[in-house]
Length: 321
Image (cartoon, rainbow, N blue to C red):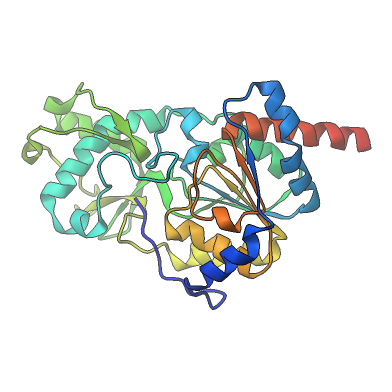
């Protein structure tokens, strides 16, 4: 759903990545932990514990992989390749009434999955880590709001929040939950349709007459409504990137959770961290764009891995108290 934004901080240049790859490749430690029982995950989580212990001011970046255990599909497979239909482009949404009809029809069917999702063990563990004082800042590429639901505070939602809808004319904001009954009332022929859920409240709804779908409009001015998320072809607001970059400058290390980093709006933080000499660790199933920049990679599900980490930190802090 998101755009690869042009870089503008730290004098970044994408060609520097090859040099950074060579510099960091020798130091990188790749820890494979696939399909392990809980006790083994806890035993082998020590390298991650050691990383966190050595770097108590973490810049944490999370992605779709942290929400899959809540039942929300992600865009990419373990090889970092996009699965399913390509997400809608901003120019199509803004310029085509048919594209908007199709988007809102799919959203009407797909929204209940996101609306009903609850924080999983990974979200709850991240909230515990924040309460332990280990964060400089949490930045998420996700739009599901589950970090906040889990108890994290002051989260930078880099790509917005699918739970909000904004009028592109007057700027009025409403909740996506409040919009759902209107969509249902205006489009009874679409009620009850079944479709495979995809990322961010979308659904694989195809083969229907979208021309008859009634798109929602602003209750205040009648203007065009858009979910308050960053579509592909749309820039991440500068204020969010600036706030995240400032937090990264203050941090002593970066921790990536459940992200392939294939989209540049997330990967650039790894570039900046590597250039600044800040070590990077990742917990992710499968390939990431930043593999060559990582000091530590834990290839395991986020839920049990982070739960084990938070529990170990809790126990060791209790013993030292």
